[in-house]
Image (cartoon, rainbow, N blue to C red; front, side):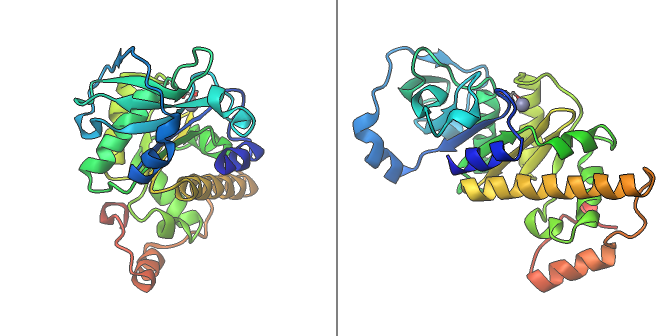
Length: 263
Ligand code: 2HA
Ligand code: ZN
């Protein structure tokens, strides 16, 4: 709820833009057991996620306004359970009045599967936001992980501290499509966040604060870059953090940066 309120106040979720999910842990399941009433009907997934066999996931609903989460949680989101093979899901709580999980459900599930395969099993939150400066910058720079990572790392010192593995970036793709899910997950095996050109950004993290924090840092540095560029007549700003300085930050804070993005 806190994340949704903060993110909506920042203008990241116009209308039904964006979506959010949380993979429940054992303690959550014990606490919520009295509330869970599985429906009998199972729904097949286009792409199976065997890594998530039997998992329960809280997911925002299709068409739901995230700004309403605090007032009307059982319509705005719901909990699904995956079957023992990770091939289909059924609703266990919420999704009142025939609401359905977000169109990005398969992207979220694939992101959890990717995190588990990458050894980041602690990642329990996947979050997608229509962050305006990210979208604006995506109309100016090429959709490559290297271009995005270097632009942001060199604009604001904190960038490499928050996302030392860099960020992913994809060219424009149809929202909610299996192609977008597939391409996002490939990049999110390495990066915790992935930019969707002219659309927004998706992140995976251990908790809600971390997921919000990654997107907030990317969004803030994208905004600073745009402002600096505009103040410089549209040209690339002249005084950016150097590769030597980026390495010095990593040394000081014991970070292992993605070497492919340093010169
Ligand atoms: O929830 O943001 O990408 C609507 C969307 C789809
Ligand atoms: Zn979106």
